[in-house]
Length: 576
Image (cartoon, rainbow, N blue to C red):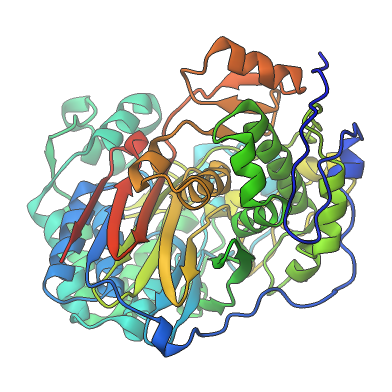
């Protein structure tokens, strides 16, 4: 159904035209090739020292209350944001193991206050050197072949690199906090309990996992105390012997033997040769601030950066936060970014990814001219699905900030458990794109295809908003393909509309599905809201699950707010 033409026009940032009223094909809108490189993205340069005040408060937001409490204790004792992030990630891996753990990997984006600049670490899992592509085309794989999806884990090396760079509290003290939770016991959280109940039939018979999380054959309930002694012992060794103990010796042998039992080609050499990567963050100037986010192999940063370069704050405020027109325009931009992900994104170490060209303003201006308030462009359907992650944010008294996202991918990763070491192994290689999924985009092969040594494209989107040398917003999200859409909406809510941190993470959101409908919305929308979206061409359905989350720290006028998304029952705390 066609809506009545809107009479209002909107002014945008310099270089932008007015919203067009065109109805063009998805190919014309989303699948255009990027132009040749026109110039570099905004440079990552330090702010003048005089413009870098610190806020003398600390803050933590995570999806695990236990992780938040331990991180706060470290900060209260004078630890850095890096120290707190290490503790939070490791404790979350013990207390919220459905989404993260030392058998996985992730990304982090941090702000170094003294230097006035960000740094970015990629500790994403990599494909073993002996990987073969054939099994990926036959998914879903049976449980006995799940090893093909296991990537070489990077979390411990990533956290150690963060600590070496910006930590102050001894490494052993940080890691032993997580070890203590595993050895002495921890209380099951609401989100973990819900996931265990929902996936009872899938998990109860998984060797090792069933006995840990289904005592007496029933899923552990919220508030129940569980112990994980094998993981506690492994963490104690990592604490006292350093990160290499996971990549060489008995623990490495346990990981490799277990993975190979399920079909993985992983070798001890793959573990020994794993390396983290330092990346240059994507940077976008937006409304007086610089927004730093994750580059390839993340596609989340690309989506957020494209949206910020398509619409101005004034225009979005004119549409009204959460209005049907606002949601529709964001959805159109997000669908374009997803199409770019499918056509161009891969591991930049094995596939050329020209982010400058993808973010070229002239290219985005052409896309913008084809976006209408009255029409929806269909996104070619493909098979990416929802996955689990854990996002956490830490900020110290000196103005240093860490946004870190860690994951084992789907619920309990590959559902493969290394029993001697207590490590749940990831299924991160499931994030490679199979051939069938790129056919709708006219591609003969995906830039994100399975290859030995490659890192699969991710949606993880750790992000910082910096103004006058100080972080004003720090955020990150969990939930697979929903991460960049969620992070973008929360950033706009907190920055453009100046909503409080808690309001920003709690507000209703939209989601871009990859099959059937064009738009998913949170429950509770009024009928006229849905009708307005449908009149713009959206095919709308209510989001079937609320297990995605964004964590946020907001700093304004010297005051620090921290907020945890209620969708995953996280916890946020601040202190002085």
